[in-house]
Image (cartoon, rainbow, N blue to C red; front, side, top):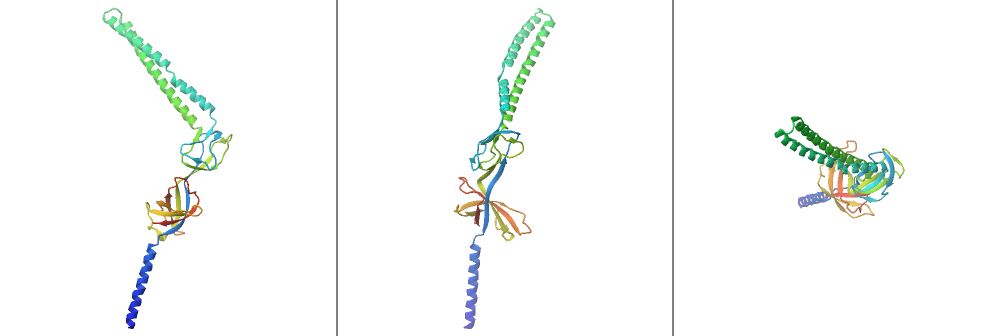
Length: 271
């Protein structure tokens, strides 16, 4: 009987060990993380000048391409108006077209007269030369108008450079300058894109290979935000920090309604 009790004890111990290992394997990998903006941009001007106005303030929600600020641009506006007027004028071209048509008819008449021996060769050659010169003058007028159009486009681009637009959609984090200040190489505003959010994690080297790009995880922001959200693994570092024995992982968390604020800690469970 003693051997039977020992056999039952061994079987029971093995069953308990197997159950414990199964439960441990079923438990998801969970780590703490930090939710950060997808991108942070300090917006400035591509040209120096005096800041005329700022259209947004700290905390404002903005869209990509929205006007944020503008520089004084009186000279640029006047230059554009002048260039636009020059590009619009076509009187010189119409004049050259009429002159070419007249000289074409003249040359045709002299050709006929020359064939009937009514005029000398010199007159006919002069008519041909005048027509050729008129064609060149018309071509030059057309080229001048094209140059005027290019100058208008350049003036428009110079004026556009005086307008500061947002390169991303997001929220204004900081405002550095005020109207009347001179801009040269300083940023005017700091903007953060918070849709999507980046969830930054640090994992130990033992978890290397257990998470892969394209996988998903469940994110639990700390209170008072709360709730849980599905995120996609976008980056898994391929270089391990030898000193700490850790590597970084980044998740991409959709945040279209800006419900979740950046800078909040969270708990992440890998699915």
